[in-house]
Length: 250
Ligand code: 1GP
Image (cartoon, rainbow, N blue to C red; front, side):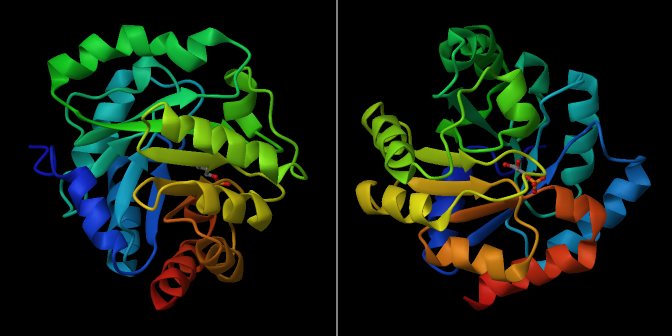
């Protein structure tokens, strides 16, 4: 029923007035059957995750995304699409991160896929969260598939310059991505510099390579509003719960 639709941005803003937020990333290519997914969601939602991001950089069919969104709908939590391509959309979701991969070498990923996607998003009536997506360091599949020119880990000022450019282009969310499974997350220095240049109402999302509570807490303390974890949720639910609890305890 997409009952959060039109209310997701407001929900995130209001919740952010409290503790930092946590998003759980579900890759439709990697989940097992529906019951496995239901069990995973049951656990992660009761641990206190704030929204479910659904997406992946490879091998996605809209029907797979639909299947995941339909299970998320059974829980009292927003479903937000995180599409790697036009096939990453679903008519059943609440919202979509409308991501421009700002440091791509290929205009298709900056504004190209978006032109195919926009009329579909309109037809589906999804809530749109305009997001500047910036790939740092490792990059993983997202970096490779998106023809990114990843910003070196030791150049935080370039990350901040991209983030500010995103804000000046009118984006309301800035997503710093080290890549799924990254050996190192986005450096704290880059997060701090982004936070210091961005308006407070621009939400800073950080993901990639976050595997333990201490790292997550330090990333939040450096100024991230939203922490995303994917791999750790797939591999070790207890640890994922400890990450969420650490964020909520501050
Ligand atoms: C989402 O890529 C992240 O931005 C997820 O990364 O799989 O390393 O948690 P992990």
